[in-house]
Amino acid sequence: MGHTVTEKILLSHTKGLKSIAPGDFIMANVDICLGNDVTSPIAIKEFRELGLSKVFNNKRVVLVPDHFLPAKDMRSANQARILKDFAEEFKIENYFELGDMGVEHALLPERGLVLPGDLMIGADSHTCTHGAVGVFATGVGSTDLAFAMAFGECWLKVPETIKIVFTGKPRKWVGGKDLILKVIADLGVSGALYKALEFEGDALQYLDMDDRFSICNMAVEAGAKNGIIPADKITEKYVKAAIKKYKPARKSFKAVKSDKGAVYSEVREYNVSKLEPFVASPNLPSNGKPVSSYKNVKVDQVVVGSCTNGRISDMKIAASVLKGKKVNPGVRLIVIPATQDVYADAVKEGYAEIFVKAGGTFCTPSCGPCLGGHMGILFEGEVAVATTNRNFVGRMGHPKSLIYLANPAIAAASAVKGCIAHPSEI
Amino acid sequence: MKFKGKVHKFGNDINTDEIIPARYLNTSDPKELAAHCMEDADPKFVNKAAAGDIIVGGENFGCGSSREHAPIAIKAFGISCIIAKSFARIFYRNAINIGLPIFTSAEAAEELKSGDKVEVDAAKGEILRSGKKKHFKSEVFPKFLNKMILSGGLMGYAKKRIKKLKN
Image (tube, rainbow over all chains, first blue to last red; front, side):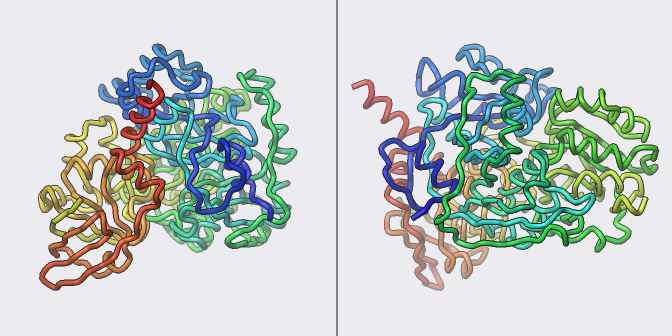
């Protein structure tokens, strides 16, 4: 019997295991474990209580203070400090101080820290993003991170896999974000609960890495344990370039694919050439509908950024919509490139100038407003269109504010029109 | 272990942003987090509920962020356990890891109402509603997880493992 790519990665990372099946509990070896400034302080406290003199591997623990930095208040500065002091004491090689720091799920692949075939855990629910590099990557809690830092292991239940097949060629202005919003609209927020979402199909040739990151990023919003796109030529080219530029400690990898006889709990096919850009209305990420179904939804704030859509392709798309145009008076446009590299490239390519000339802001990398942290909190009654991944009650600020999730083109067009819009309308 | 308390009923998809909003995530102090427990799901929860009470949810309880602050807030407040139709996976593992008792029972979650007085027998996986006298069965934890729970959560298990290695 064949195995899915997820099962194969879990099997190869579990000592002494000869076979594997969905439902099995395993104690798996972890290649990379990750924490941020919100989740790591708890993990660090628990790790210290174990009284160990070192972490399992100081090259495999990654700490990224991306949520509340630049420090939004004294408490956040303290939380960041806890990471910094721990990194120094335990010689954590991959600790990213402000200035090098970026949104963790954009930063790690950029630096070649996650490789095809890896098993990764992160104390952040959007760790599933890294599945776009052909990695088994899953979100866990702070205590799981403490355990992984100590032993390099994580307990996991082997998931069933739902296969999603994308065929056809996406239309203009349709990208990874729209595809995943459509999938989640069909599955619902718990339709993939405890399962793996595996994405395949001939449409992948038209989806660059940034599209693939957007897709895998939101796997968790359907309740999935992980999202994964088996590594192909596009993935390998990306990873090799990252390794060449940043020379990480690990330079070799082996791409893993699903077997022909792999068993899936279900298979869903999507002809992406038929899709319009999708927008998810408050208060669930599963409320996706074609953008044309939104009429006169007035907008106060637009956010372009986050681990979902804060990469260079997203900046390019938003800039191409905004070029020569002005942000609607009364709308605040907040653009947040996800890493320093994206920031620098956006400046070099002229995107930053386009945002500023249009009347938008261009900010330093941070998770910022995505989770209601800082850099753009909403007041009561305000409405935002955001390229982020969640629109639960109070997600970006006041419990009576509203968030619509969209791709960067729709977000940019909405900033110009002052209400939810398609680029063709401006 | 046995729990006894008053039910506070919630609907489906109660997410971690509602359980403990991001504006409180600049601390990991359990007492401070407890003061804002369930705040965006029900701003009056901390006034209505008392230590020992039980939260009952629908499907997908605890969905959203991985923030361990969510089960920490609930546990620190003194909620004795959570009963739900299903739990989101990160919340599920966080609750087990920190020793917050959770029980999966679609029937109980459907029928119990706010104000009901309930007794839970963790060892038997039984939920009893006093007054209207009805028994519900909860799903039993797999052996693998039970071992961890009985060690006092994941860190209890970790400490045992370190002790073994030293000996």
